[in-house]
Length: 113
Image 1 (cartoon, rainbow, N blue to C red):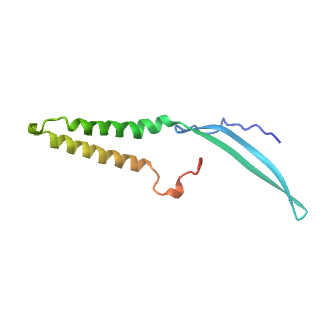
Image 2: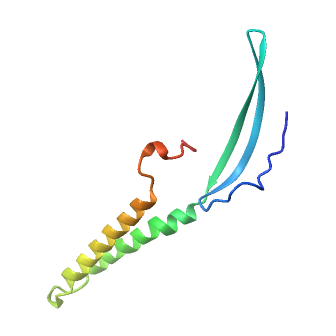
Image 3: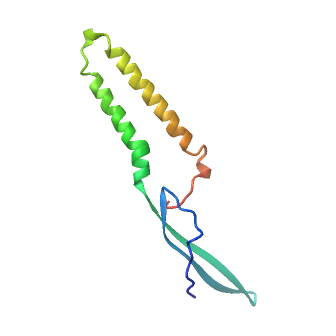
């Protein structure tokens, strides 16, 4: 039995797009009684742009700054302060990313696993 799924009341998400959302109705007989089961098939497509902009690109830039810090001459006196600032930026960024991630792994969606 084919039922069209209406998605106009669904809430849009910046990380996922709903590709397929369809109910599957099955009737199973057990001990002479018919039982109706409804299974929902939902297929999500991940939008990688958010993850790239919020996690990968800043870490790449911080790593690039770390390489640039080795090009600063040792006698200028700024090499240590630049390296410490890069280390501080890395620690702050990891703290911000940690705040965005869920605290426990049992609260993470198991979609796609």
